[in-house]
Amino acid sequence: MTVQELEQQLDIDQLSTTSPTIWSRTIELAITSLMGWVPRPVGVLLRRLSYRPIFARMGRGVYIHTGVELLGGCSIEVGDYVKILRDVFFDMRAPNSLLRIGNKVCIDRGVDIKATVCDCLIDIGDGSYLGPYVCMAGPGHIKIGKECLIASHTSIYANNHREHGLSREGIEIQDKCWIGSGVRILDGVTIGKGSVIGAGAVVNKDIPPFSIAVGVPAKVIKASKGNGTA
Figure 1 (cartoon, rainbow, N blue to C red):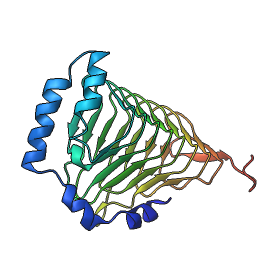
Figure 2: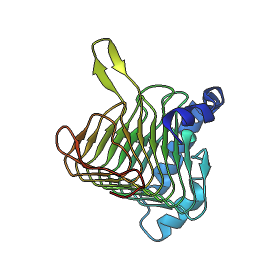
Figure 3: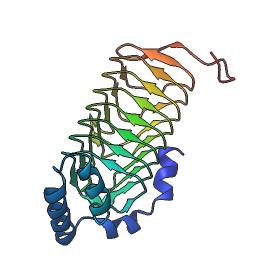
Figure 4: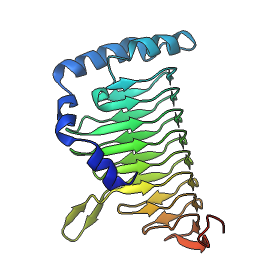
């Protein structure tokens, strides 16, 4: 599913009903303050049971470590067997925004995900991994495919300051991509299926499927021959 298809699938008018209210924020603060710092293993079980009212949806077998901070949990959907590790920060308070986390996703320590303004959709596909201290923010839509590996300290910002103001074209990382440590992915970029981005690269333009790209700015050094093999 592309960023554009994601936007079409999700009805923005329906999302407005899940925008945070004073009541939902009060519940969120009360539950996270009481349960957020209870140590393992008891804390994991307590959070699995007590955090259900916070999220728009929470699947089975969800593991939430201590120190996870949630703002706008009513705009967050969490799939089955998701792991959210220590000191993760989600901020989805912006109106008409949604964070959707697929099944068997692992979000490692210190990951920061936020919707900076309204109408921001962030979708993380099944089986994907976000490494420590990955930062991700709108206002543009962000789509991460299935079984992607995104290494530590990568930045994914779907916004850019241009001559005529702030852009929000969106970012798409297709299925089974490997993103190296410290990569910067800029607004308007699509990284094709099965591609590898070398550590420290700055991706400012589309990368074809099954490619290897490195450098600042990122350049393709090895590309598919059209049959999914290099």
